[in-house]
Length: 435
Image (cartoon, rainbow, N blue to C red; front, side):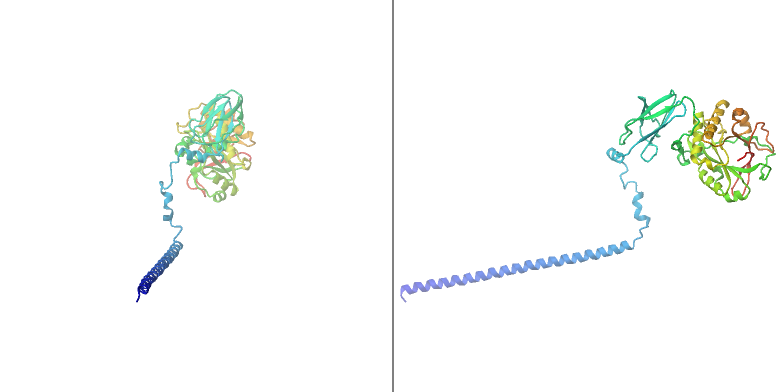
């Protein structure tokens, strides 16, 4: 083989070797790529399968949870125990949060005058007294503060005339921009105070045991001739009773069936200690029950007023508690002591008589009958009865025949009565008035 042919043979052999090596390399690369793709596909399939399994498990858990909820007693108090946890909610809001709660709330003023005074009521947008805040008002540029933070500011010893009352700014509230004009009277005008309801309290708001402490002077004056039976059908006299919270629940149908023709019901009292105006807790129930049973009705109010202005308040309260046009008997002021510790116990007869007159005049100025209740000794020693001749006199004296020498139209002759429909003792009365 010549040298040229030999070189060609060697080159061809080398090329074949490189071609074989290249082919092997290419096949290996293709195989590796295919294996890698298969592995990735396997991983993806495994992940998808895992996700499907997890989703199925979650769905099964949800179904189980819903089934448990369906079986839960939603009235179970344990579910709402968090409400009793005082630490569950934020009990101490920040100053900013307090302001946010009040933003947009409006305050308003009501001002009244009875005699050389102004009583100012600061109300929120729900018509309630604003309590617990430092409130200031200006009356003709003179500043006054609500010292006890009860929403009421009282200013006395003013000269008669017209005044402007303006509420100063209160943090977090909108206050009236315009002043309220008030006419201050030089003398008491015996007219109902229209917004007296703002001052009326319930026994839940006071210490009733201390405040409701009337002492009936007739108890000490009774003798052995006291009559305790029902006195029915005696000429032109009518048999009745008087009741208050002390008689508790009353079956008025039974009372009516027992021959009771009228009932004088206590509507309220002024507290012996603080002077608060308080509604008798049984008043509305007694009034509605008596009227429904066909029994004629009158009212009485236990006074602890210390001046005629407070007497006007008490009469206004009695008028405000009911539509007096439904009454057949008078509205009485009950003037008695409070065991020597009452705010009105130390008054002299002249002032006490003025108080009774102010009460009765206010009732009568509204178009209704008025009267005074007291014991024989109280009329004789603590009142100037000659000034009370224009009103119905209701005497309390527990004996067969009264020793009282003055005129009277009603007589409470015992506090030891007993009648169907009322548990315990009850006061019996005779009325000689014309309804």
